[in-house]
Image (cartoon, rainbow, N blue to C red; front, side, top):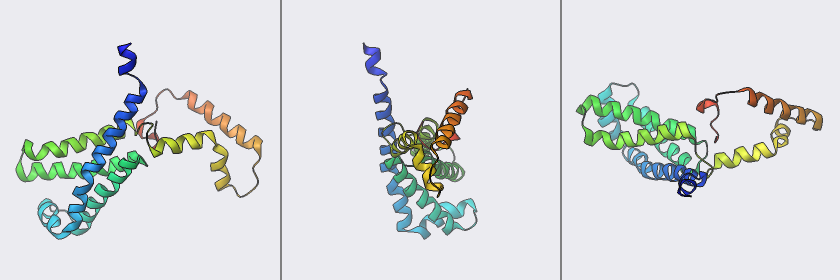
Length: 185
């Protein structure tokens, strides 16, 4: 009884929701702080690493934190948003180690954001996300996608044969790599 309560998929999906929303909501203000004084951020964090185009890279860092956070919160293109955050956190961790050595007080928050983004990339957004809704809509109505790209009237035999081919090709795969789709798994 306890086993079925603790391991139900609704709790797993709720955990993914909490991880996504808290990571995005807590990280988004860091991006807005960068935009507030972009020259100061470039002087303090980008120029010490001797990277080219420090102002441009500062805007990219702020944009990936803000945009990635919104994507995590909404659960829309979640893995793409988490990848943007992961890239920014990787550079931030590198900066912290280069400028201050292995200082756990500087690294702990960066490492938590890094771990959250990495987990979201590997596990996906869960069922409480826009990615899941889009995937289920496309799965239940594949004619919709075909009709968008096809200006000619639909031939139902072609649509049904495409669906059969897609299902049979999916059954042959023994391992589905997490990056094969940015939509929910």
